[in-house]
Image (cartoon, rainbow, N blue to C red; front, side, top):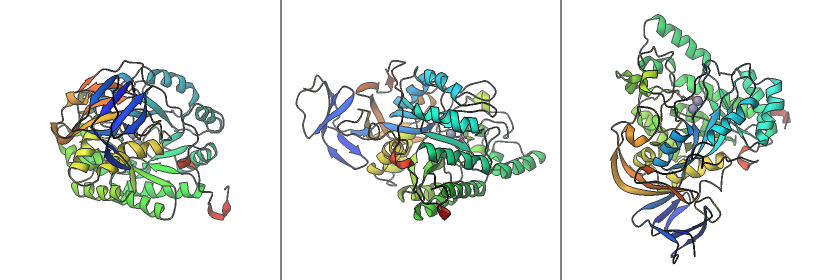
Length: 467
Ligand code: URP
Ligand code: ZN
Ligand code: ZN
């Protein structure tokens, strides 16, 4: 007899969909069968899809800021948002500030994350790859289960030059970490920004002018070329346009271990949103492009070039964003809760991707890429019972209240979606039902990551150097 049975749903995974029951015990899936009799508790999923819980590989939560502040989104509020939208695990960021180490922040950030309800892992941002940091401190983080390093090729005060980026790649290769890269050309953006400000062009719409697609394409090419030089697997974060994705596709065709992430904002928003009076609320980097770009990106998703869709959740309330000139408005938009509904609606409901591709993009592939699979990202005996009961036909108009996050806006306000989560289970516990989140703060678990296959170098370098 199973303590919990999900009965009668269409169980969908990245490998196909079949009508079956799910037996759950000890927070894990133990049985998948056409019919499971009994059950101490039974949840009727008739007419619903049962999906693997979303894995969001890119979220800025309770993140310290260089000015001493912190993201408005706490781990508790982010957990509510995630569960409301069908996501059960996240990977969030621990920043490093120039002149500082990385180890001293880990315990504090880990304690903060433990106050929330989401299962969580961390990326370490590297902004100052000194010998001491890379040789002494990062290995300590790796021993604690941090297996991904994020680098920024733009942004004051985080950006790395090529020499620093190569150092990070080299260290990651030795340590068995993934490197994730924000690809935009720092100097090119600085030049354009200065010229725009000199001309009095200060509104949010000039954010897009300051960083057109070519600065993303150039940095993507460079990030991949240097990763190839060092033979280090990399994930290109938040790809906004096909010309950057084409750089990834070309490298993949040569066998380079590079993958690409895109986000709902690059599939639904355009630069025109930033020309509105509240345009600052749509400002993120890279900048959203145009509607034709959406279709090109869907093509890159179908082709497998872009293998994960994350939210890049990074919310700011309107008072923080609206009114300043574009060069000082903080970048980032919230999207934790909206990610699955938007991608299901724009992707599956509109026939651009299959249900299997949807599961892969929002759950299975991020779990694999982040070294969390098969504990996360799949519905199979032995995996955590992270499940979403999904109504594929329900039509919902998105509002900020439905997002459950801490900030007072969503860039998706008023958009209509088809498909909606009616219940979310995290490790076999119902944590959201009909929009009501009921998880206990402090119930989220840290997900330490060991060595995993996707970060294995190819062992091929020019001249055999360092291989
Ligand atoms: O605009 C964005 N994407 N803000 C969040 C930080 C980052 O670059 O990922
Ligand atoms: Zn970034
Ligand atoms: Zn980000």
